[in-house]
Length: 307
Image (cartoon, rainbow, N blue to C red; front, side, top):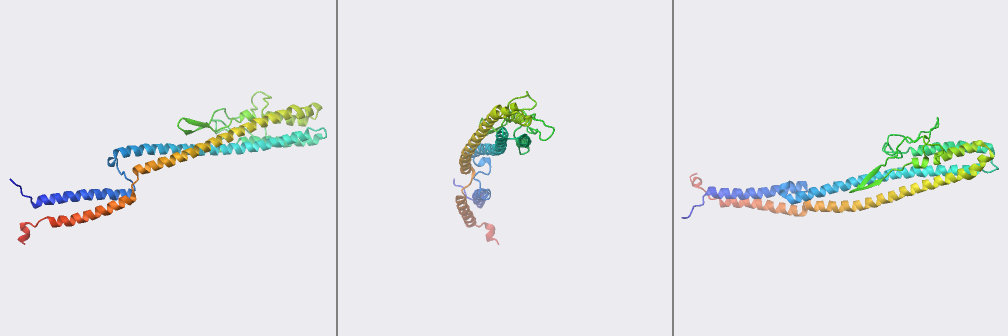
């Protein structure tokens, strides 16, 4: 027994086909407006999972890059301060050599002592360098100014020996701070620690002393101690330079990782706009053609003849 295909059945079929085409057209419009191949997880569950993983990786890489940028700036501030400290120590060395000669009078030695006093304040001032509101030479006590300047004279170190580090990769950290106490010393500690501030204070005392023993000390132990501190300062600057080079190398590597990860993420979630535009144009034509064909396919009913 054969069944009869009614107008209602044809209408339902035509409407169903039009709805399917309309749904595809709507999805293509969403791709065009968002520029994304995946607009909701149901579009591509695996692609969504892959996109989330890549987005997380990309965020991690960018955070490491920010850490490196901050660490590099910290190193630049540190190196600039150490450079100025080095200049001040070199000047103090020149004054010590000039004033330690037998031909130098006491007035010249007193003047040299006064200038070295000012150089000491300059050195402590550079040790108080800060970055982003944090004192770079204070260890983890970044809110504490490492050294006080001016009068009364106080060479005590106010920071701590803590380590400041920045993470530049998975389980990879770099120490960015310098323990300035190891270079300048701590006036509140044992006297005569032989560090830079103690050495300079001893030099000014011997310059003002004016005795033969003071002159011998200036030419001997004082100058030797000053050179030892200069060597320590130079080694510290070399360490800072090596750390900066390491940060630059890490940043270069992360830039490459960022580019490759961004490309992978784009491949997964970004729509091919050229293909999307073509699909939209074709689907629009199909939709219009379907409307026209549907109108022609649906046969006239008896009511149409009774008009």
